[in-house]
Image (cartoon, rainbow, N blue to C red; front, side):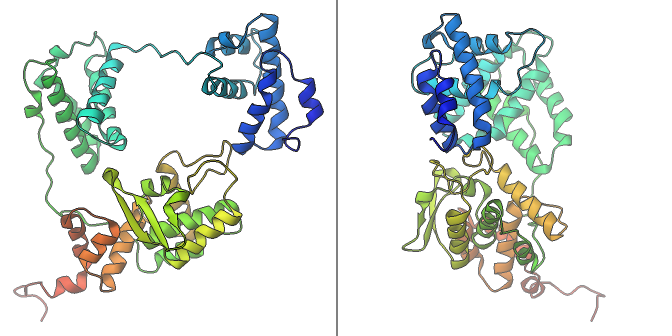
Length: 407
């Protein structure tokens, strides 16, 4: 702690009701990876706030968001930059310690309450995963906002014409996959409203299907040798570069999904037996072999790249606050930057591109669809069957002769 901040400065700034909690705050921001150079500014801000509390005879039980906002606006027309973040950070810490009142729930309007109730229904009664809610709730929020923009929300006024108009307005602007999600979300919500007695008739029947033919799409993948080109151009001289290289290898060698990399924990790596435990879609678990180059890349990152942190996630942010990736977007960003750096032009630049490429390469090298499905952890053989379309050599043996074609 003494190497993190000048002890004499710390003693001078111990004042007011927050004085005894500075050490806990310093320990927290040190664990979160803040640089020592940022500490004095944070401690000065907390000391000014603590002194302000003392002059107004406010104790910790009266410290809340309102007190912080009043302090930040103490000088009309003057912005005290750099104060808001540390004050909100120490307020969150005090709440966790039970020293200040819990954050008051925000006022919810009628629409938001209905959305919250629908979310609970999906989670508790339908058993959907949190990630699935991201595909449902935004569409429902948009439907209610469009329909009840100029009037108070009354779900009993919702009609088939409203639903049809909403679909005509938005479905055409979406990709095929997103349009199907929109239809699924609308049907789910309308059935929920009918079940709750909010609407007199079942409007789900007026939601049309999006045309879809089984196995109609072709997986997007990189040409042979492109993945190795991406890996060869990956920077490995910096901590962040070592992290990104390990992430790319997990995508390229094991076909992990972005969400599986985000949730990967240090406890999921069995170094002795060379196994990796992966949290799959739908709450399932799977064990994969920790191949040598992947294991070596992860080990190098853990030894000389991963920031010191109490967080158990394998892959961490490299900017304060130090913690695991927020979501799958970070993994896709790593892939996109790696493709640009290696000079590979691809219409798709997400993390799933490597998964499709791995399956395609395995098929070209003689692996069966069953073996590919087992590695990619597909629950249905139909999911793997789409890769048969890219095996042109095998498809030629099935092609019928075309009358008048080349002899």
